[in-house]
Image (cartoon, rainbow, N blue to C red; front, side, top):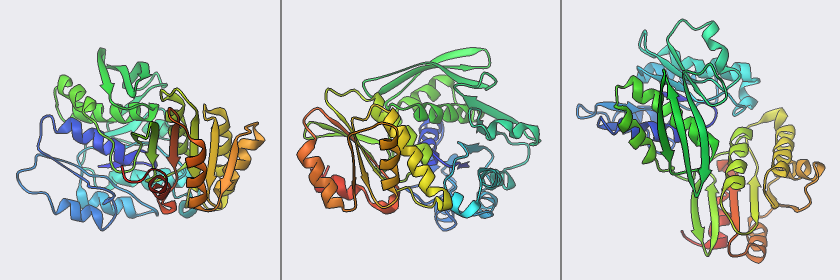
Length: 350
């Protein structure tokens, strides 16, 4: 069972590829991670399956509890505690409580896998009476760590240090967030008694799902399609990918509104603008009412090539006129903004 503010689906996919090396494995399809989608997923289980990777999403307290009690997982994974759904829950402390509801249905004495680099998850061992396996990059106390990370040519290579051992790993994607996803999958693979060599093979076979950081080349332009969802944490991750991607030309960041952020929406959008100004993006293009605060944040921090639009056609027309062969363009916004329509207007079908 997998939950978390950011990275649930990518982590689910990574775990699926790992477990599939040894077991016939079912996984949550698409975004079927709520109180309708999860039972639909479970109804696909039959005796031929040996494992299942079940994603659990939420917007309010109590939802993860019901999902966990329905699925009864024997391994739990929490990727991080961000600010998604803070409009409903009020604080990150409340979001932590909601995510920890995954414990309600986990079979007794089963382990839970947590991100040791998350400031809130790293402290739960003080009050949880359960086996915890911590993974991370920066926290030296993590049980399983990634070290010597090298990103180039749309590939990330690193060493995984675990219980006195070390093994080389490779994923066909860039972005530090993908390293975290791989570490979570490595933990689950160990718990599931998958051979370490097969875990590494599974991680290497990972493919992004849906509209999540698919990197394609269209008319000589590297396009990062990341239109499925957005939060401050995933915006930062996407900007990092744009900064790390190999390109001979300019980097354009097309950022839209992040939804469901409540009273702190203006500040969080402003902060994303500051992050954009500190990234390697050469041009920032903002789309949407709240995204204007992204533009303000970038300008306030010294970025000059900043534009804001209210109409998708205007965004598309700007890109057609200004993006050249060899450039890279990131598209990132909450699902409700339908930013993929700008990609379609600009480049047509994939």
